[in-house]
Length: 228
Image (cartoon, helix red, strand yellow):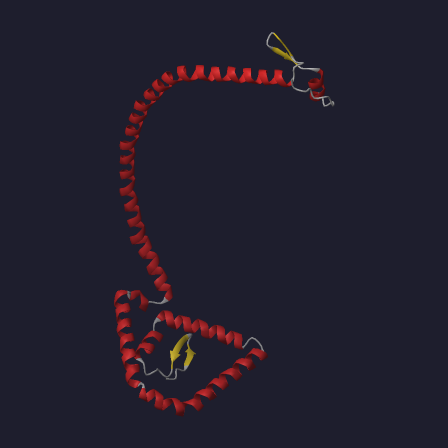
């Protein structure tokens, strides 16, 4: 199965088609032809870039051709023995290709036309469908909002008076407890201070620090008083 590909008038031609119909059909698809043409053009440019690349690639081509010629006598009997399985595989591939071509006719179009067809399909079919969906959904969302917002507001109007009433009941109970706790705290602090600093005086509720505490507050060393 030797495929000799060349270029003629800017298009890829298959001089010796393979024995597999599926491969021949695939090679004739515009997208495949365009890809082969692009690859061939790039290869030729790389090959002709300079004398080194030309010699290297030409040597590789000659080596491959010689290997193919040497291997033909060995491969031919093997290929003949595999003609039956190859034919079955070829039939399956052809059936799959028929299915693809029937479901996606654009596969037979050149790449440029495929792009244009896809763009037109999006503009003419997909975009209007999306716009229709948005036009259908937006009123539904607005309707749901119009239904939910009054319900939320009504619940808020019901809950707020209950919260205010509960606050009015709780605050008179909590406030005295807070004031009592604060008074107890101040009294405990005063008792502890009197115990630790007996030299402090309390005149009219105002605490007057002893000399040592005043020195400590000013950053001067002092003698810590001993507790009673």
